[in-house]
Image (cartoon, rainbow, N blue to C red; front, side, top):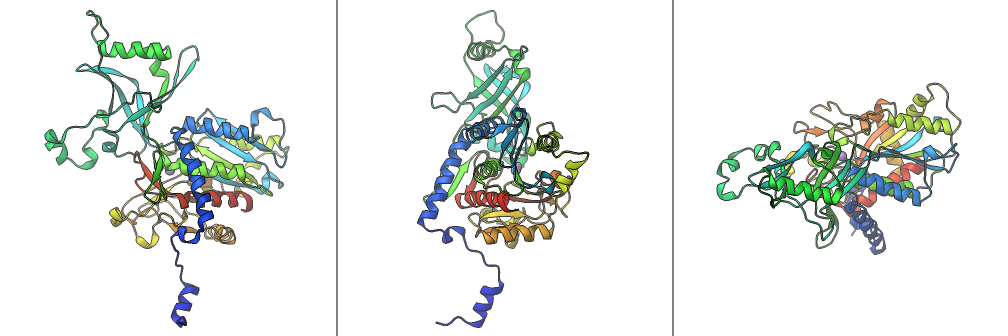
Length: 470
Ligand code: MN
Ligand code: MN
């Protein structure tokens, strides 16, 4: 049957995207699934920013990247990295053009919402020992009770000795949990608003119930825990004051669905984009402009501090590149930034039909429709957001369409419902062209976030061609 004129015109003029899987053959699907398997493996051993940075560093070194501090000069083709206090990474592949002609950056963050231990965390109550916590980032507190939690991080003694902690992940490790109230007695709790159901001050981690056998000790359960910590880590209670211990879900990321099309796992915001950006810089064939991958810390609490993206530490790294390329002169860094372009690689909201009321359907990101661009972030009138320039978006669309990479443009949710931010504005402030571009997520900031394997691969491909061609 012949197509009607309307049909032909519709095909020519309308932007009708199809679910990405339909454009893949069986071999393509295998490539996508293999990439996701590798991602799941990496994610499961990189649940915190420190672990992600350490594992990224190991991969970089294996692939010929050198610590910028260890090289005297850089030339086209060189691969260097800077690890910022074990929590953030800046990675560069030097291109043939001068740095002052601009950089192609992809920037993700490797911190995720979680619970941190307070400075004086250990206490005993009713013959239970607990760790007191202070949550990090935007969480729904009720989601963190009654699930298995593991403890990751470092403890530093006064002599500088640093002890790495990772307990609750191994099959033979114990796990920890935060208790919730039984429904039988939760009448009052259940009347509360969801946000008030669990108090931040009640997020106390249960860590022991066995006394140290001595009659003249006041808090025997606490003492027994300290004894075990001393035997295992060689620390005393005061050493907890100079520690950074993070509680994360003890369960692992897995393939989701009968069709295994999705990934469920903790910390995908934003380790999914971070992993895709890391893989992309490892595999990109960088020609003209220097490519830089940023793995930032502290995005979930506003990017502050000397490991957050607001820090001058990134400028220091770029200055070192300029110095070691023999290009530097006063204020050159500003020119570098103004000639640079960046994908702010952060996850977006995936449309969830169960909660469809918060989304504008024609401006939502859909799982398995490819990497999603947010022209702007911010909330209620774009307030506080970084708004990408149309000229830049046009250029990016051109690159993606040339490379047959499916993408979508979206925003977080309905105009007056809410909003959010990323590191985009911080780099835009420096003068770069920046747009947010990442993997759509369901259940964002929960202990078990959901992504599509198609989108993960799409993000990787997008970042790769951006490093190569922007
Ligand atoms: Mn994020
Ligand atoms: Mn987030």
